[in-house]
Image (tube, rainbow, N blue to C red; front, side, top):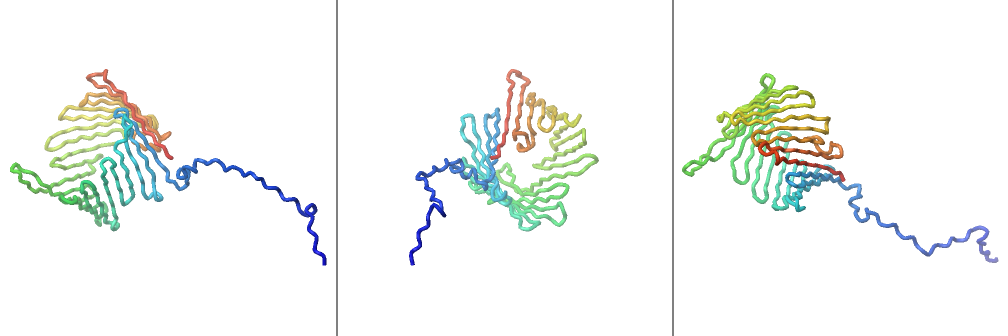
Amino acid sequence: MADPSPQSPNLSTSPPTPQSTTSESPPPPTRSFFFPFLKSPYRPKLRVTSEFDSESLLFLNKVSCKLFDNLAKLKLSFQNNSQREVTQPQVSLTSKYLSVLYDVEEKNTFIKSTVDVSPRLQLRALHNVNAQQGEVAMEANLAEPGYSLELSSPVPIGYPRATLKFPLGEVSLQEREEEEEEENSKRMLSVNGILKRQVMDGVCSALYTDEELRLRYAYKDEALSFIPTISLPSNAASFAFKRRFSPSDKLSYWYKFDSNMWSAVYKRTYGKDYKFKAGYDSEVRLGWASLWVGDETGKVKTRPMKMKVQLMLQVPQDDIKTSVLMFRVKKRWDI
């Protein structure tokens, strides 16, 4: 039997496509090739905050990010002076139960830990590594709501302190040493505390610390605040008066009877992003005025462009020619 003849290429098959002898050059490397961390979808978001104060000529810088699915926060803070030198660098790692702060210049570490032993018992500890000092504390919530007992003691040397907290205030007891003329120390029991109670339409408070009693009554409604204060046994008395003329206008006044010193501040707001303040302080004989662009006490992230600006003019009463115009700028970037 004869061999089968070969298949003709021009009838059932097409000729093979010749391959190019030259290969295409690879695409140029992108930025992610050199910095894959910046393009990684798993990279934590960086928060950079910088604040400049014209009075001190310092830049206050903070760089932070959240780690481990927001379980911890890593923060780097430092300052830049007028010579562009980096000063006071600090690195901190903060979580719910443990916080560590490292001071680069001092080469010192501060450790703070909190442990919930049970729903009603909490343990806290503070430690300064270089000084080899710290404090341990235990706080127990009592059966009645609003009542708790805290026991704390310095480590390694010191006298323990007991603090009882209740709805109307708190009282602390601690033993201390008092030096006498004959260079002999005498142990005494120190008592500190604060009590608050609603009286008529205001709040009356009594603060006792370092053998001084400070009595304060604060009355406040929608338009008026009146706060008299007296300290015993020095009999130093003062009062504060605040009057709100409208939701955007407010006047505050403070007077000290023992020194006849006084100060006054007028504040006017324009929406949520603008605030004007002007005042005078007789103790330093200085008048001033400031303008805030951005909420003065709010966070930068809620402001337009994530930035706050303050302009301040200080006018000394004794020498008007030495008036100073200062400014402060705070800006945040999310990277």
